Length: 350
Image (cartoon, rainbow, N blue to C red; front, side, top):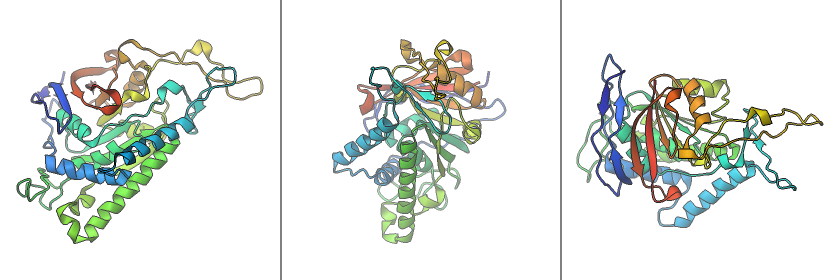
């Protein structure tokens, strides 16, 4: 068993949306202690949150912009989702990439905020050269946030002053601790939206670099230090070669499990028939597990595709330790989509 580094117990903080933390244990290499990125400075977090909100089209003074974006995202899901036949039976949608049947109760849109993501990542401990993956990335908010949260925004990568005259970014070197930030989603409309939002962020950062008057609010060096951002269309259960390579490279994965609102059971092979009489694809029936929000299908899929040493944070779901996942701790967080709170569980892939 690898040595364990335990993060300090975090206290109640409304600003970072923490309710409580039962200290998260971070496995480390037996040969050396990893270089952990400093926790995100509050001022830097505020800047990154504003950048991501601007890229998404959210306006702080107008809650309707967030509501409308959520509604549009959920419309993209509805367009992809299963519909009812005239006889009331459910049909399922098949992705163009994976040809995997998706039952409607596995497509529920939810979203975490950038401050909540920062809380989770700081509790887990971001390591230099981490490759971040958001499973079910939706509009791309967490991927865009992760790409900037640990990016240095001054030339030396060190602290340049107090909260009043600095963005608070503190790094041991000039490198962004998160080397790559990836997102994967099974809904084509959401992947398209996320790519647009990534382009928006790229444009905002570019403008900040060109217009020196933005230096006090958006440091232009953030654009230079942003992680590589990519969004992929795919099914985590049946990945193509590109997604399989991403999974193998991932060192820190996050998944908000609202997408599996009723659990995540195995396909019942007894009910599978590949073709109808007219040679069209038949619908597979899916059995789901409701006990303890267990996600056995996801657990097996990640177990076979993630590399040993990967840390997996699953919000409102459970992986199976028999699949090679070692439980490290739980973090209770506030999330409007799952009031009164959600639980982020950290696993270490053995």
